Image (cartoon, rainbow, N blue to C red; front, side, top):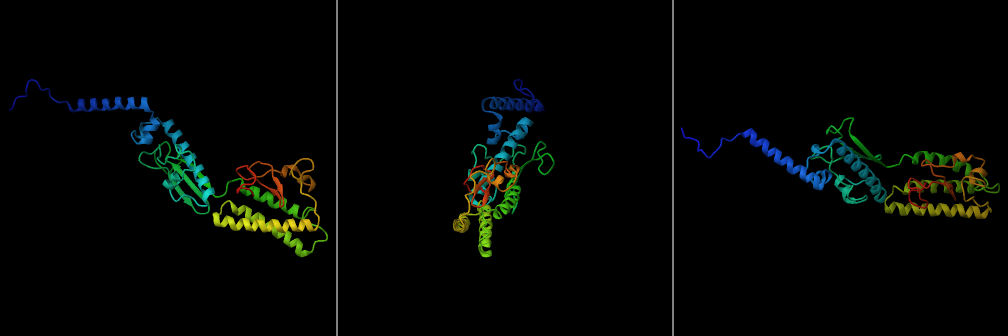
Length: 281
C-alpha cells in the first residue's frame, strides 16, 4: 500500500462539483447585472430556461408581434410572403432589433413560421411550457386580406348600386348600351382597385391601366349628359349619402373610417387610413 503524501488532501468529488457550480452561478449573476438577461438570451450565452418566466413570455410576444407586422409589410411591398423565417428577418421591414427569430420560450429553436397559400402566414412561440403545438403557445398571423376589408367590400357594393341608379350616374336619355358601359366601368374600376394591393409590379401596371380606362369612360358619360357634381363629402349636410336618401350610419368602412367620395361613388381609405394609396378600395 502506497501512503498518501501528507501535503495532499483527499479529493471530495461532490464538494468540488458544488464549488464549481457556485462559481459558474456567481459569474452568471455578474453577467446578468452588467448586461441584462434579454441580451444574453439573444446572444445565446444564457439558456432561456434561466430567464424569469414572465420575461420569456413578454419577449416571445414582442417577437411574434413584430414578425407578424413585418410579414404583412413584406407582402404589401412585394405581393408574396417571405419564403421562410430567415428571409422575413432579412427583409428588414420592421425595426431590426425586433426582428429576431429565436424563440425565447424554447432554447435552440426558432419561432415557428408557416405559410398557408391564399390565407396568410402564422407564427408560433412555444409558450410557457416550452413545448410547441399546445394551448399555451403564443400565436401571431398575417392575413392576405385584413379583417376589415370584407365588410368594407360588402358595404361598398350596396352603396355603389344605389349610386349607379342615382342622377349622379344615370340620365333618362342614356341608351341601354351607355348604361351598361357606365355600370361595367364602375365594376371594373372597383375590381382592379381591390386587386391592386395584392399584385406584383407588373400586375399593378395592368390594373392601373384598367382603372384609368374605367375612369375615362365614367368621365366621358358624365360630361355628355351633364350629370351633377358628386359631393365632396360622404356624410353630413349635403353629403352623398343624404342626397341618395341613405342614413349617415352607412358612411364608415370596416376599419371605422368615413368613406371618401369619387367617380365610383364611395372609396375606402383601407387599413392604412391614408387616401390615395394602394390599400384603397
